[in-house]
Image 1 (cartoon, rainbow, N blue to C red):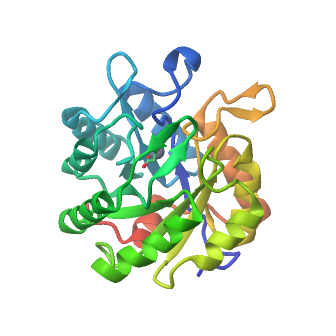
Image 2 (cartoon, helix red, strand yellow):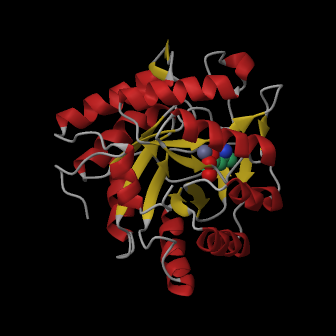
Length: 279
Ligand code: KMH
Ligand code: ZN
């Protein structure tokens, strides 16, 4: 488990699948915008990027060619660890979500159970989780287990017991908190989730959706965890103050980490932490 002085992994989730470009023109939705954002966030202190992509109309897509082009562009323009979302949008079929691994990212998100997601349902049936996990092992892609609820913590133990450790042998978790339908974005919920993590977990971080971003970030630091920030998760810096760029959120995460005497990890350190496939 991490200590308070351990280097801090900051992951940026710059786009997501939920916000419309029309409502938020500063959201990076084109490949050019995504690469520019990635470079700014790397300079600000991020070591990993969690990627959702959009089509020419700025709508969420899991198009295979676009995903591959995105991975290639991020690899050639930055040294960030590239994590592709396999969650996609709530409308994406499970089959398309499995195909995300064809783009050969370093890491992929892997959500450990179905959750209500606002008015929608984010579907992650157990057989899909098992298929995606085994595919990640076969393709040598390191999963980041996304836990939206306490039940997902238990499901992770069950998955590891059934199929063994991920590719690379490290088990990295992100607690996604404050989704309407998932566990609340509170320090109490974070402490409960961390206490229940399986012994195999080698690193964990947390992200708080919306206004829970600060309480979750601070609670994660207080417990020695890592941080994920970005416009996928929050669009305001404070009530009525819109986020202007993802780099602003990374800068704030760095500042929060400094207070906890944590120095941002480099991408190389993040690769060692997660034991991703050699480039
Ligand atoms: N967009 C959400 C439905 C992930 O990236 O794996 C799912 C999500 C999780 O964002
Ligand atoms: Zn995501």
